[in-house]
Image (tube, rainbow, N blue to C red; front, side, top):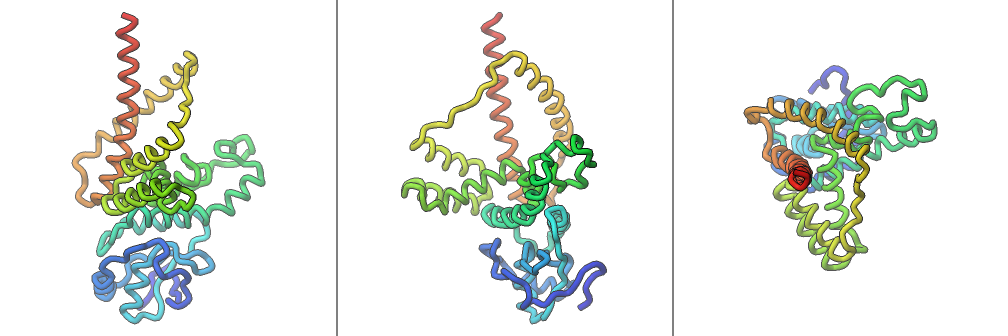
Length: 294
């Protein structure tokens, strides 16, 4: 088997962490192995420079099943490289098994760790998000640049094919399920939420279950309020045009492409439902204010 141009072959026994660190369930590896035997490996596995596996546990397992000694691989040295590699892999749907939210969190943490040294270096240099111009630096290149919207978490979430909010909430659910300091009742609720999240792919509802359990013990968090009229005007002046533009773009998503997975659709429903609840609450308060002033 010949590796595609720009890729290298690595020995399977040299790859570290091939026991599905991120994957909990490899699924039907036999079908993937048959596909690889028939048409080859479309996308190489993704490794760090020292040979740690970032993405491709199922492909490695299938290659082992086929008796291969080596496998095509790409090495990534930064979050930018890893993000581009994962975007390419999401385009391959043949014999693909979607990751559970917990598996995505595990992979996301590995990607965050990959970017950590660069983030430390930027901090040491005094460069902050949004501050490149003040330091005479050019804008960060590509969607995975260090100044991308949402920071490292936002870039990682985009590479994983989800929103920053969904990724952070999934991380909260996973952390709560394995939190040894939680009460037994909270642990049971969190573990049930994790199991349901992995089965259904629904993140927000299970995140809310954990938040309600926490609030029942600690009380609801203190909500900050924007009461100043000038601040409210600035917020509305910035938000309304941005929301109008977003809505115009979203209105073009019709019909839903059949290549979209049900898990992706569920994640989008979660994110949009959160935004809808926020907007509906604000519209209700504005109508009440208008009626009271009439």
